Length: 538
Image (cartoon, rainbow, N blue to C red):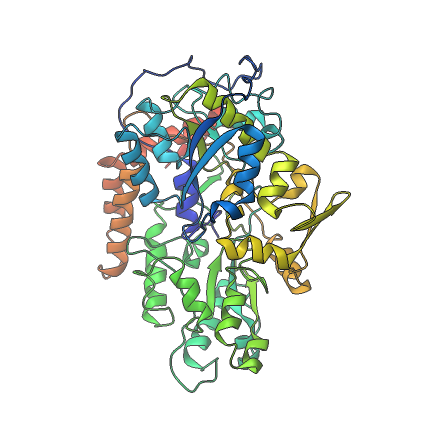
């Protein structure tokens, strides 16, 4: 229902696409610019006779790991090709990631190149942490990068009237969906839900009618993860009340779905569902992917996913594969497992069209030589050669290529890459797995006909109009502080208050004391400027 995902999709996309912070400095190297240069005015890259040590800090799941040096053929290729010693550190972007970056910056150890979420990048720019990119990120210096990111997208991504961050190439295709245990539906004589009411009826049946046939009252209809802080937009009650995306443009109005006046009704609807006791009671405190693991363990029959392979037969982190693995000692049940996608708001809109998410930045304290060498490597990662190596491994070993078709050797890929910490995915941080951008077609022997039908279904959903630009709060206003307080209020209203009658007053305080109206008025103005049409926040 919300675009992007890790964990709590709607909230996460918004936190990546918008920014917020406090004070400003102007002590950067390089001239400031309000938009990227297309002239490529930087001097040619230096000869690679000097070996450079480069430090990079990038976004990748915490359960991925770099292998021993002798097994890391990607690092070996990069080091030899560019005469560097590339030191990669990775974490999944979130609070821990930001805290670690803050410590590195405070200690004077800012990585040469790093990623950070939108909120933190705005603060870093105001504090003078990153280098100006005007003479580095250009079509001349990075021709492959501009196959993935358009120049107007790059221009719209800038904030604070300087060019100090650039978006990581981002996936244009999205894969958000609910998934339901169809084998449970079949046992109970039910159909895959199509509407919200259908979904609630299935949740009731999964709770009350012993869908797994174990004779115990131990299953629930739906599970999600609140992380102890959030009533996420995975809850279908947001969509039920017309809040199908984080931000919405509707008839000249700019709407922030998480703080809209309708959120009171959303919480009343969720409260009603909770009173039916058809939702996993641990939902609020558990953290992703505990909700997915709970679904795989047969404790809930509906769960939300946001990756292409979320329910693939052989996906490494697939709920389908996890469920089958858990039931491996009961082959009859394992063979029947069938997580199928559905969305009650497939025709109304399940999210908004993709916008750039995480940026990459260069340290203002690094050298020109290190930036240029990093630029060369990043652009190579966006090339066919770099893309193939970091996504599919070594030619002739992990894949074969005939024409534009790339066929994966699943056995060697698993042995050399997946079983070694899935380390290629860490290096693949710079490009999404969308080979069609480079005119390639991936043929994965692990992908079944069922998998292809799943993809066909989840890519048929409607997405609502994009904002057309990334947005940022006015200087001195902190979106993060607003969101933190908003989540506290919304959680309290749902879990402690008897009803949502207090929401108008809560909302008024959020919009005033916590500057929500000032932030969203600014967003509406920025969007109006880009789209050439007037939008107002109410």
